[in-house]
Length: 269
Image (tube, rainbow, N blue to C red; front, side, top):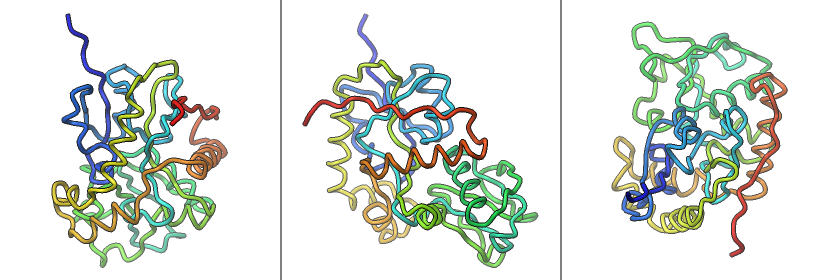
């Protein structure tokens, strides 16, 4: 009986396309796309060999994981697509309805609001991933494509906060929202090299990706977003930022334990 192909799991948002576009036609793998909050389960249950998970998942997983440092979704300043929209000044927020698709963004929200504004608002899951128009919540956290495609009315929400920009102000570091994770001890074979080549190839074809996937986006904004706002490499500063973020989460009780970072060993170039 033939062995099944190793599965790579990732989000289907526009922001992940530079990391995964073309993988669906790779004969040696199977590509699975899902929302960020479900990718960890796919990895833990061995439905996937490697998954593009929110970085907070490393700390909360019911298994030992390691970072595969061949790509990430991050920013070195504003993100454009991880934003708080508020009807009151940010320092006066008491309750935030959050888009639960990204565990990392919800944790970052709590770190930033506490450290920059001294507030610890109540959190509530945003029904249907969009604010109710008839009874809008005081503040909402939106992530991903819906920030552009379903941006809340500025009259209802005159105050905004970009969480990537706030983290940069707070720490001087970039922020990493998601990175490739794998189960410790797994031999990934050629998967890391394949993922790295895919990212490098797609960095040269951003306009093709925009044409194919940026539905509901102005084309010039989508190109600027993928080329200049987001960062896809993961190096020493990004790893430092991840560790600092984990430490800040641990200090606030957002994670129960602080696991040491583990990196999947890549072959020498």
